[in-house]
Length: 187
Image 1 (cartoon, rainbow, N blue to C red):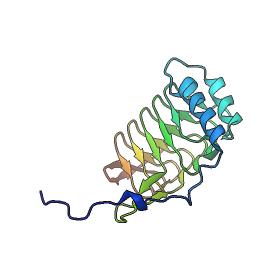
Image 2: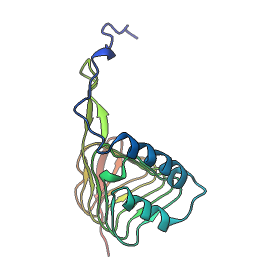
Image 3: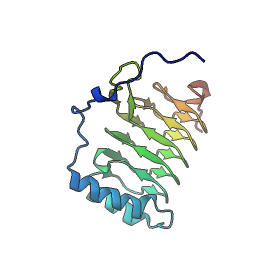
C-alpha cells in the first residue's frame, strides 16, 4: 500500500458552528437518563421511556414502542409519530432532526446516523443532515440510514443494508449502498 503523503492536521478542526441544541447540564442529565432507562436492557418499561422522551423535548405520538437497549443521542431533535416501533439496540445518533412518521418500524440494531465528516477537507469538518422516515417505512435489522436521507412512504430498507440516498415510496431496497430490488405491494 502506498504511504500516505498528506497527514491530517487536527489542530485546524473547528466545528464551532454546530450547536447540540441544549446546554451542558441538560445534555449531561440526558446522558445518564439514556444510560439508565434506554440503553440498559434491563428496563422494559415502555411508558416510562416515552414519558422521559417527552420531558426532554421529543415530540412523541400515541402507541409508540421503545424496546430495551435503544440509544438516543438528543431527544430534543426527535419527532416520532403514532404507532411506531423502535426495536432492541436501535441507535438514533441524531445530531440534528430525525423525523419518524406514523406506522414506522425501525428493527433491531438499526442505525439512524445524522452526522459524518468531510474526509476531503484537512479539517475533517462535521457534516449533519436531517433524516425523515415517512409513513409506513420499515428499516430492517442492522440496516443504516445515512445523513440527509429521506425514506419515502412505505419503503423498505432490507436487513443489513445502507441507505445513502433517498428511498422512493413503495420500493424495497437492499445492499450497500442500497439499490431498489422490487416494488412493495401492500394488500
